[in-house]
Amino acid sequence: MSAVADADAAEEIVWQGKFITTKRRGRWEYVGRARGIRAAVILAIDDADHVILVDQYRVPLGCRCIELPAGLVGDEDDTQDEDVSAAGARELEEETGYRPGRMEVIGEFFSSPGMVSESFTLLRAHDLEKIGEGGGVEGEDIVVHRVPLATIGAQIAEWRNAGYAIDVKMLTLLGPGILG
Image 1 (cartoon, helix red, strand yellow):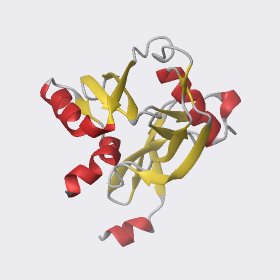
Image 2: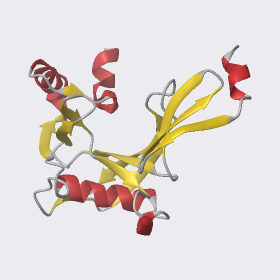
Image 3: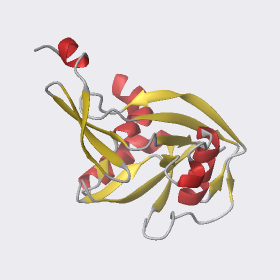
Image 4: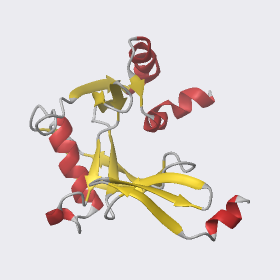
């Protein structure tokens, strides 16, 4: 059976929790977000060319992970119709303590399309104002990092050597260095 034939098969929900759903279509098994929840990922670079990053412990990885700030859109009953830019601004402030003057939608992306149907909207935060310490909501234990873009490759290598996981979305910052 080919992937095209699997596409014509009915989608079957195997299990559904509050935030994720495991599904089967033909011979493909994959995971998606439950209840129409989406994700917003924020690329925040300040006026001094420093990128704002976060790290937090990620249970599936068993270690802390370096990431772009991000959060869920529509994950609570009262936010199901939340605008992605408003959610991104809210998450950036909550996680990092930076308030954006303006949010720009870069586009929708899929991080692992062979096993996860979830997409995220990448947003660029402009005109940042530091208004707090960040750290996320209770229990998130988010650490904020402000890193010069000029040294991002070396900093990521240092974190990797220290045992941190590096989120795939960090490639947005490494791209030019990788391409030479």
